[in-house]
Image (cartoon, rainbow over all chains, first blue to last red; front, side, top):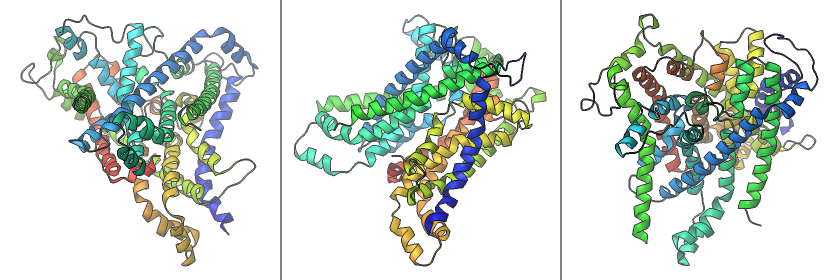
Length: 288
Length: 282
């Protein structure tokens, strides 16, 4: 009897999503086999020429990919550690608990590009407050945005500011849903706070942690907004991520065909590596 | 030992709070500055360090012809796109989530979990991968630079979030609820509409908030798919950034753009403290 009804519930959403997505995916694959650029804006067929170029003659893409991996893994680890610490701190009763919870949530509600515009003025090398305050302490001006190494850390700082709240939210919601009994048992055994964390809280939180880390990794792999406004990938290509490189190839240089090749390869790599990471994390964090 | 722990805890919380609040304070201060107080040396406190002016804020309501930044229209565009796409995503997502939570689907090797994963996995899609085909597609049918095109793209962004939150939420709404309704003579649609939905308001609010957050903060699609006719707020503010640093109006417009969603932080906290969010986000 439910046979018909269940499809009435499922299909509108499913088909709208598939309907919107199917064209871009097929189109991207077809486009990646063409030489579409600003001189020949047409869907010709050049076989796998683009893919050969990508795998033999484009170190810049692979560099941008490793840079992206470095940036997203580093930021997610920092977000997890800080977010977990913050969640543990405001989990139980502390003074002004609700005030701190609201404050800790605020950055994720703000538009990344818009806050990055503010961060850019904040880290401005001569007119920004950071170098000014450090200058008062006798520190030489730091090239936050124009030094290739420091610029990466500036991006990390902004990303951590922006998205730690999301990690905090997921982990705090998880902590609040934990059963009380294991903690009572640990208290009766007289376990120290440290042991309680290692043997009770952390194992109970493992599934939630994995979920939160994966979600954040997925979102972090799309780092683009921050880089776009903060450094435009610069200095040179020091903070260029894969998305940004594809954007330059496709929508600035209008090498649509090649950009589609990059997009498709990137998507496949993303799906494979996130699946592997999810499997490995599950193995590492959940014993038995 | 215990005292040291408490001391470290409060130190950390204080430092983090300062870190979070710092850019906002800087932006508020900057929004009252003029050319002189931005460019001569770094200034912080109004009246003490510099003479505050309202110029940065006045520019926001002036027409572009008189040297203003027209932020009103992008503001309404952003509200329209975010709300429309969120609404569509919530409706379709909730229906699909209900189906995935209550009925079993089997098609070859595909099971309920696989369909749920399909929905959620759309978040993996990097915006750039979608934007190039969409750019070409929308320009072919003449919908580049239109609100409609943006709403369509935003549904892809937001429906996964709605499904993700609602499946978990429905899983916690007891099945007996629908069964009783069915026995009482409701058809499945009435059972869903009259019994399940009213009991799912907290989940719907959480899902709605998340859709609104992730719709409101998106920049990339709006940036690629619109130019002059239709501008969304983030694109407008970033466009200010590229011209010669009028930091005061930049800060003012940034503050006014992020202000509405800060209220959402209070709502989220309320649901968190009441325990409604715990299940919805697992």
